[in-house]
Length: 116
Image (tube, rainbow, N blue to C red; front, side, top):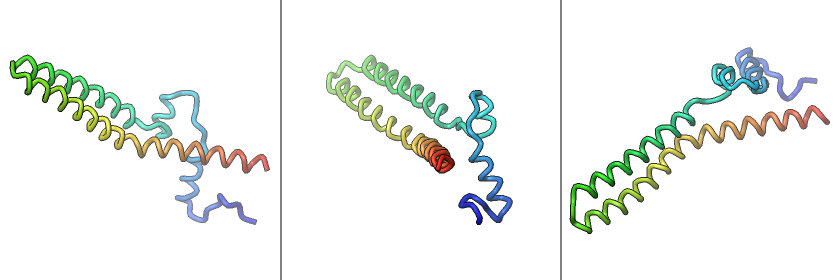
C-alpha cells in the first residue's frame, strides 16, 4: 500500500527529500541549503536604515524652517511615513514567515503521524 508521501515523479521525490531534512544546528549550513532565508534579515536591515533616513529628514526639515506649521507637519508626516514604511517591510517579510510556519507545521504533523 503506497504511503501518502510517495511520489511517482523523481522531481517531486527530490522536493520531498529536501523538505523532510530537518534544520541543522548550524545557521550558515541552513542558509546555504536554503532552509533559512536571507530576505527577512535583509528587509529588517533595510527597515532600520529607512527609519534612520526618515528621522534624519525630519531633523533636516525642522532645522531649515522657522514656521511652526511646517515643523508640526514634518513631525506628523514622518510618523505617518514610518508607519507606511513598517507596513511595506512587513509585507515583504510576510510570505517568508508563512513559509517558516507552514514548514514547522509540516514537520510536526510528520512527527505525530510517525508516532501513531
